[in-house]
Image 1 (spheres, one colour):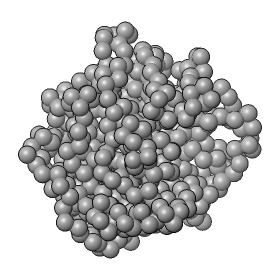
Image 2: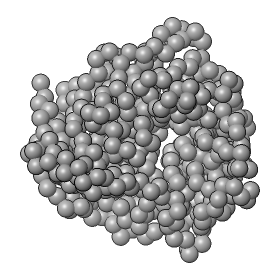
Image 3: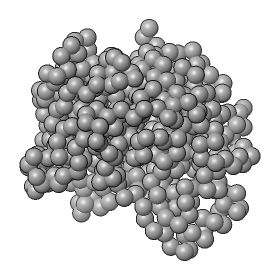
Image 4: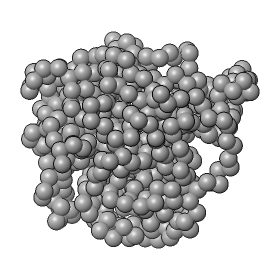
Length: 496
């Protein structure tokens, strides 16, 4: 059996192991060249800590319980192949998408394209300046999609921040033509109610449907009025993306959804969805919608139909994301307790909050139900100065097993097995030590995804990482290849 003990400490300076190629790539602006990154889009993400917490973190490092500042540790079955630090785009790194030999990395200031034909030495192909948090990203054919969930002065890539209380403000989806990877071209924009925090593609031959997740309406926001209890559905013609438009706003919560506190203390009120994952081969979708988890049919992509809905008003604070297993008889939901700005991987919070919830899907057709089985949370100690909570991950495609790689912010990258829904277990990990000991700072992997034999991670602060896992349980996945991967549009890896 593979040993999972931490490897000896390896101290490294930021960028020492980075692939140098691409660090001087030309910054592209999808609009007038005068654009500059707008710090107004970046969340504060910093909270002072007490002298006691600093002392505890220092003691944990000295004892070896927690890695030192910026120190890398990992299990023996994980190898760190490369790190590419931030370059022209200095905002927070966000989500990832893949196509052929390319990786597409979101950033609050725009997006970056890497050539990953040599995973040990990723090369920057393009960097596109287009501020607008959080720039959730996906690709389909020659189109790239980018979410804007911050109020902007207009829909251009040279826009500036502007209050959502102003009618002229803009938030929504941007579409780029990436037929020339070195020179992405901005081709369309669609404004959506309450912006686009995340989005999910449902592609077909002629069109790409985009499910737009957004939330937190206010009576003071002209374009984000309550109730906001559904999602926007955009139809994008592949051959004429400039004709993209909203074709429906299905109401998912006719009763208003989870009321949150004070009825359910500590639980987010449902005012929309945070993220949706679709499994097109099964005509299924799972929605993580603040205070609710959903299972719904997408046989008619313009008119999704709810099959089942669940709540966890004891341990889940914010339903953040969802992942199906390959057989579509399980869903992993994540709870982003603290909104990605708090240290929740500690004894005070415990193993059931800020964790994954594993649900079996039982029954058939429209009578299927989500049945809770267990929680999974990393048990590796984290300092109270480290933001750590369940975040974005993907399936590792191995027949007969349910394996997943997942980001945990400063908790690092975890590889875990939920084949037995009731007894999940970690089988590998990679993490850096605290970014600092004098404040709580949002950092660490935003996303960690398995793509064509390697694990790719977008670290919020440190850049783009490439990992390799060598383990008898995950090795069969190395033989599985896909031409395109948007994790929220899960492929059927074995129907080929």
